[in-house]
Length: 280
Length: 337
Ligand SMILES: Cc1cc2nc3c(=O)[nH]c(=O)nc-3n(C[C@H](O)[C@H](O)[C@H](O)COP(=O)(O)OP(=O)(O)OC[C@H]3O[C@@H](n4cnc5c(N)ncnc54)[C@H](O)[C@@H]3O)c2cc1C
Ligand code: SF4
Ligand code: SF4
Ligand code: FES
Image 1 (cartoon, rainbow over the protein chains, first blue to last red):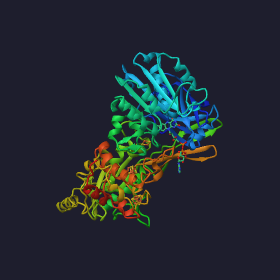
Image 2: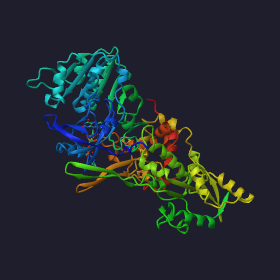
Image 3: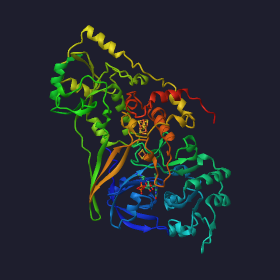
């Protein structure tokens, strides 16, 4: 018998870090309790998991770590409701439940030998961090061409993973572009919305894949820019969010037409999305 | 083959020792599938139950697991309980409905153990329909009112006796406990007559799926759902609807995680944490209901997920009739986009 996919494994919250200045996003570091659990939790960048805050319920969150970081999983969670609030309030050392990994992942096999442009807005940067981290790993970096990351937030205090961004700034293996919406004191990098910054940077679309995640408005205005840069829809990927419960394609909640986002997604190419009803 | 009702009743009463036996019972307001201890409790002359028998594999409310917190620690325990079960008196539409639910609870990646372990330990004794309700339209879906598809053992009421058809290995194991006799020529003729019956009410679904492929943006959806109250009764009474919610019931430091029937007609069904709701209007929700049953399910699983039991027609408080909705879609003009 396959394992009961409704039963979470238990992981220990070893770090509960306030990630953004507005204190609405925390990053949780969870530690596997044993080797067996970790063995069974083989994941790829782009997948997600259902986190249980016992006593409150469970909710889906993208995995922010890369499989190249053993022993732990990280999630960056915005405080919006019942489960996310309960998670924010948890003391380090508390046991949480984890079901997963779930869903498909970014097509890293197809990316091999190509350049990759990662475009992220706001706190949707979680699985994009996983993707960048994975490709930057010594074992994998040689498989890919240029890696460009364009990442923006409303203001500097809302950028996730600031230490890592600082490290990437000086890393010759990655071309990092950060931007904020309006000028702010002490900010010396780009200022402007992601679509216009993308237009300015104008990454070449030759032999290049683009991965775009962020708020709906950002995606809506970035896609035409990518089109102008001649990215075909087959080479633009995004990750979708829907309300989810089971994460297994059974509870019927997350469908867009024939596709269950939890099982058949959350990663889709723009070419795939064009074939689906506009109901997400 | 056949067996007299008297002998069948004796065998039935003996089965109660080895199985949990579920059968149609008259509960005062209608027919309900209920655990019985004796064949004398079974209602033998009925059209169909108010609620579909899917609840024995997929209960309206069930515990998935329980947990106990102690300080920062937690222990988690599965709440899966399974019994050998016989479901007696299942109508052909509902038996087909179970075959459709099987496809949902075991998909290309996951098997739902709560559903499947119960399903595998259950034997379905189907009972052919000799009376047909005006809301029945199963013949639209190549289901015969006296067809054995989906049953393990299938019976047809011949008055004093049942005609018995062994459909599966599970059914054979039960039939071995029955003293079966040959049918007479007259009885065979009666069986053939019952088996050839069709529901007088039928809808044409031959082109519905391909028509719906082109209808997502049709104005047809604009008005069709106006009177719908979003009460979910159509889904709860549907033998193929499978949507559920997962929530938590908590008492101090202990709790259970439960799943409960839910449905796409409810506005909160798809509400995101951000406040965004992809199906925030009735039009989108009724479109989802029809599309899921007559289009999406066909693309994913090769058949429609409606079996023509007619329960949604009977129970809808505002008389929405899925037959008319399908018929309307068949006839709707396509808009050029
Ligand atoms: C694949 C995927 C990946 C995701 N990744 C991330 C991630 O990395 N980080 C992240 O922060 N988020 C992520 N999300 C979003 C996250 O899942 C939601 O924010 C989360 O489910 C919210 O759960 P909650 O229990 O905190 O909120 P809920 O308590 O469910 O409530 C959220 C809001 O919904 C409304 N609401 C809920 N129930 C009711 C009701 N009964 N009546 C009225 N209103 C109601 C309330 O207005 C409330 O404010 C992801 C989602 C998906 C699908
Ligand atoms: S989506 Fe709607 S029609 Fe489809 S199974 Fe769920 S409740 Fe039934
Ligand atoms: S039973 Fe009738 S009123 Fe209730 S949700 Fe279904 S169609 Fe709407
Ligand atoms: S979350 Fe249950 S089907 Fe996708």
